[in-house]
Amino acid sequence: MTITIDSGKGNKLAPKLHQLFSTVGIHGNKEMPEDIAPKGLHQGSLEHIMFITLTVSIDYQRDAIALWKNSRKTFEDPNTAYLFDPKALHETQPSVIRQDMQKHGLSKKQHKDAEIWRTVGVTFYKKWQASPLNFLADCGYDAPEILLRLRSDSHLYNNKPRQDYPYLRGNKIGPLWLRMLRDNVGISNIKNLDNVPIPVDIHIARATLSTGIVRGHYSGSLEGIFEEIRKAWFDSVKGTAIHGRNMIALDVDEPLWHLSKYGCTYRDKSSGDCPKFNTCEVNGYCVKGRVEIDSSTVSLDT
Image (cartoon, rainbow, N blue to C red; front, side, top):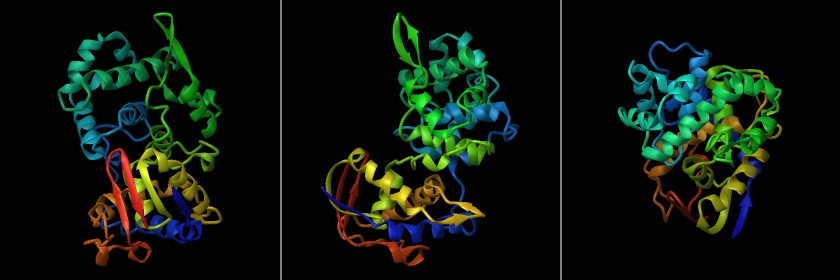
C-alpha cells in the first residue's frame, strides 16, 4: 500500500462541500434518509431519540433510504409502534419482535437485527430509565466518553458478559449516532465532537478516493483503508470555519455521502471518467485513475 493524504486539497474541499450541501445541495440533493421523521413525531422528543437510536443501530450493510423508509412505516403502524418503546421491548417475547420487525421490512437479517434492536432498547430501559438522555448525561455529554462507553459497557447474560450496545458501538455507527443526535434530534450540548472521527462507509470511502483526498495504490479490504480516510478528514477540516465555529470531520459526512451516491458511484472504475462530471459542483477535485469499490474490497490506482 502506497497512500498519500492530501489534506491541503481536503481543506479547500471540506467547506465548499458543506456550503453547497446547506444551500443548493450536492447533485441537487440535500436531504438524508434519516431527515424525514414519521408522521406525528416531534423533533427532539424522547420518541424521536428512540426512533433515531434504534434505527441507526441496524444501519449496516443496508440501503439507507429503504431502511429509514421502512422504519417510518413501522413507527406509524399502531401494531408495530411499540418496537420503539424500550419498556415494551423488555416485556415482549423475542419471537414476536422478530415477526413484527418483518412486517414493513424493518429487519433484513431476521434474527440478528431483532437481537441488536431488542438488546439496545432493553439496555436503555434497564440501565437508563428508558432514556438515552440519561446515558448521555452520565457520560457528561462528552463525545469521546460516549463512544468509549458504547464500546465498553456490558451486562451478564447466562453468566457471560454481553455488550450493552451491539453495533451502536461500532466505528461507523457510534459517530453516526452522535451526528444524528446533533443534526436531527437537535441535542446541541454534546461536547468535544471535534474528536469524533467521520463515520466511514462505502459512500464516504468512494467520495474520498474519487476526489483524491486519499490517493495512491492500494488493493485490499475496504476497512483496511478506513483509518487513512478518517485521518484525512480530521486533518482536512483543521483551520476551517462554518457558521462562526470551527469545522469538524462530522460536518462533511452528509455532503460526501451525497457526492458518492448521486455522483461518484457512476464513474468508470478503471479510467475515472464520470457521466456526472459536467454537472458535478466539485468536478475540479475529481481524479483520474482506478477507484473500484464493492462492499468489502478496494482496488485503487490514482
